[in-house]
Every structure is written in C-alpha cells, then in structure tokens.
Length: 460
Ligand SMILES: Cc1ncc(COP(=O)(O)O)c(C=O)c1O
View 1: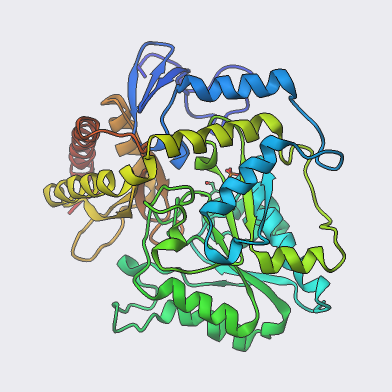
View 2: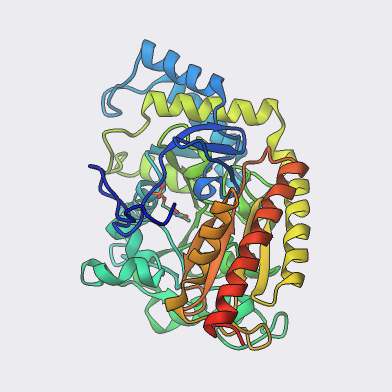
C-alpha cells in the first residue's frame, strides 16, 4: 500500500477489519497469487492452511462445471448423489481402521459446520445409549474449532471468544500441550505428560458421567502455531477418553488430508479417534467443503438406535462442492502429492531453523509436514513475548507481503493476549526454488521488524 491511500476498506463487502485496505486478488497459479494491481505473491500460507494442490488447476473447475451442468443441487433429505457417495467412500478409505466397515461421512460447507456436527453427534450418541446425563464436551485452552457458537464454546482462543463470552457454553477447558511455554513450567519427558493427565483430573473432579467427549487439534493449528505434541501425548489422551467412556474428536480441519505428511495427523501416533473433523484442504479451497468422518461404532449406534440424526444443513453433500473434493483427491492421488509433503516439509523446516539462528527475535520454529509456526519473542533466553501493542506478527506479515510472500499472522500464543507467531502452510507442490523465495522474503521481513523493534525499544 502506498502512503497516500486511504487505509480504510472501501466497497460494499463487510471486511474482517475496517482499518485495513485489502488488495484485490485476481488470479492464482500453482503457489502464486496475483493481484489486480499486478503484484505477484508466493502463497506461503496456503491462504490459511487451505490450498494443498495449488491454485488455478483447470481440471478441478472443469469437474465442478460438469457437475453443475448435470445437477447443481438436491437436498440431502430427498436424494443422495453418486458424487457425494464417492467422496465419502474416498475419505473413509484414508481414515484409521476403526472407520472401515461401517464408518460414515457427513459432508458440510466448512470446518465450523463440521465441528458443530461432531458436537451434536457426541450428544446424540449418548442419548441413543440412554446416558442422558452426558452433555459436556471438554476441550483445550489456546485452541480453535470454528466461529459458530458451539464451535467457539469448545475453542480456547481468547481473542476470538472474548466479545461473545456471554453467548458461549462453558463445559471445561484443560491445558494445551505447548512445550515451548509449558503451562506447568515442566519439561518433557520429566513432565510425564502432565498436560494430558489434566484431562483425567478434570474428569475425576467434574463427574465424568456428564461428559460426552473431548475435542482437540492433534497438532495445534492457528492459535499456537503448528505445535506438535511429544510422543505419547495423543495416545495418553485417547486412553483416558476410552477409560472414562468419552468420545474422542480429532479436529483435523487444518491438519487433515495430507497437510502433515500423513492422511491425518493422528496417523503419526496410530491413534483412532471416534470422529475426525475436516475442512480446508479437503477441497483445497476450490469449494466450501468440510466433513465429519464418523467411526463405525458411533455411526452404528445411531443407525441401530433411533436411526435418525437430528441435524442437517441445506448444503450438506452439495454436488458441486463434492465434485471439487473428489477432483482434488484424484489430483492428489495421481500426482502422489501426499508423498511430497514430508521431504518438502523437512526442507522448509531446516531453512526456517537456519533463519531462527540468524535472528534473536525468533524464539521458536516448529511444525510437521507442511504446517510450520514461527514464534517471535522479545528475549530469546526468557522467551518473553513482545508488548501486544507492537503487533509484531502483523509487522512481519506486512513486510513479508511487500517482499512478495503471503504468511498468516496470529497473536496471543503466549497467554491469549501476548505472543506473536506466523503460520506457514504452503501448497504441497512447493518447489525447492520456491522455498528459497519464501525464506528470502521472510528474512527481509524479519530484518525489517527487528530494526523497527530495536529502535522502538521493543527488543532488549
Ligand atoms: C482446527 C480448526 N477447526 C475449525 C476451523 C473452522 O473452519 P472454517 O473456518 O472452515 O469454518 C478452523 C479454521 O481455521 C480450524 O483451524
């Protein structure tokens, strides 16, 4: 943005932030976005951990157009379609063993709808079993499960919840698993996974028989920035859920469908949740699409109980969105894109670690596959975050954008208010040359931010 332009958003669209002027995106191709003004930007964020196969792949649009020409819409209370059936089958085939033979898929228009669906399924599962006292869904602080009120209730993202607190239900949040800033001040493995055991103490203190389930992001997405739990965490959580009869819901809206180098993040630890929430990468942004993968046990309890899930959206199983999802899965399969993620991820991770070594304002670099977080600090030794008013993540984001690299800035990782990080989640097709461009742009941006912070006294 040049200095003489009005920074306020103009136009008729209700913007996310009236204080900002949003560039107009005109075109996408591979890992690149082009604005109306002709600026070319490397989509290092996958927009928001959405774009997996890359922008502008014509055959996805063709598959959608073909479906729209044949049949754009039917209502799921009246018809199923082959295209939605096929997508459901293909998603189940990617899922862990407990989803095979009897698992089902509910299609939605995004992650928040999928979370809502999972929360309601948790409740209805226990109603079917005559366990009416089970109502609550426990989750973690510093988490995000979606923008709708149920999803926001189980979320722990302080800033996104704050204005709406009076509207939210409170069923209990436990500590996140965040070793860089351990909520208990401990270190792995001496901690003995105390953060997972907090679920156990919560259930002991809070009458486990009023709880339906536990929802978590197996690898923390936006709120903490690609925090990977240590070995044993996910398995311990799953074991506690099993022992107390809770359903385990893995929210893989960000991590699912290959982003971390396996079909689902839970696959890294062999954990079998009762439901998997997906969104974002499932259609790589070509259509608004999400899904809940429902394990055989949960689907069969409803099927052989009342036989009817009291829930549905008008656009569940939308044929054109399903065609997009199916075409994306085909494209991933034909181009073996899941197999690209681990190596590309390691290459990106090594480059980011080298960047961390150059700049004391980078406190931590973490991630798995092609989901990475860079956390900024005021002081690397104490890990103390910068004053939130300095908006360090925005500063780096803006400078990186000027340098031609799109990142995803987030605030509040340290304590809900303070703490700055960037999320990086490029398309799976990112090349070594593009990783170099990404890191060069980031280097320019971090240098710029470090200079501003040191002159403002933000860095000691
Ligand atoms: C883990 C997680 N769950 C749910 C959501 C909500 O998805 P959507 O924005 O598609 O409604 C998000 C979005 O960022 C997410 O990261």
